[in-house]
Length: 469
Image (cartoon, rainbow, N blue to C red; front, side):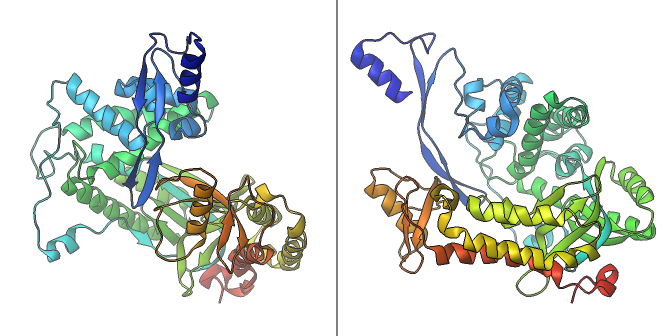
């Protein structure tokens, strides 16, 4: 838009993009969010029309136009803004809108800082989410049970809000404003199974509810309070522990659990789900696996967030692997996705052992074909947390290359680069890349291969009880 408006002014062209002739300006800025740097691009927004950057808008990318419009209706903000704001800003805008609508004063700045507490009190209160660490292995006939919007459900069900966290007997503002969003999310989640037009609405509500929990512990949140944050995680831990007990009473074995999900096998699954929903007061959704692999970390213990498995109704579900990571080059991602396509043919955990030689051959083919790979398939995409590096590194080299090409890079931006020399730490922008360090990309292929090879180390006699050795 800045280019178009400046050229229009230069050549005397009357633009009709803005209905009023005026434009709102959003300045570019970098900021830290959830421990990482994020960059928001500047924008020149025409009045009276909706202009969405389809590549950079998170709301549009995840929820489509339907999600952008629903966010606008919930917050009272224009679609131009909801398309550019993060889910956290959208849920904050919704809370502010509801407060004003109800005649509740919204502080311009929040001044009620967290009270000082002894370390022993912090250790007791702030424990975060509950995790049951898995035993690495491949398991047959596993069910993943997820609580639907667990944290928002706790806020609503327990009436948690800054003014009620200490036990005051009245309806909490936070619980009351999240209740209709939670109810709508449960409805859209059901409706989208029959009509995909509801998928965008459901996605928008999901992200709003997810960030509603994080914002309770954000120091600048208008309606946040660390006590609420800690109370939510405390209730969530109690729910997950009690759910594990119910599963074991039903004869099930809990293989893994993380915050709002449990992976169980054996026993009476239906009884477990029914009694868990009744006690927790939160609906659940279940996914059935023919088999699932929980992978080991470097020390041999089970990884919390790296697993893959074949679903009962077909297809693979993959989490935490190279094929799912945004910084994986397309060539390497395609290679690992090919491996999962092979694994999809396995009807049980034991069948995976028969694919070892085929997968090894796939690795060799991928290595042999590296010299003919297109440069765009070797691009590594990373979000840079800073622009000045004291020590030499690939990201620093890429940033310098961008600067030499006349492209400014700010902290929090995503940049792409091709590694020309891994030893000398030299990288080129994608549009300038002419050759790549094949040895460097071979290592990436081998790592992607090694991520899945633990499934070939299992002992079939031990699969059901102890995973692999």
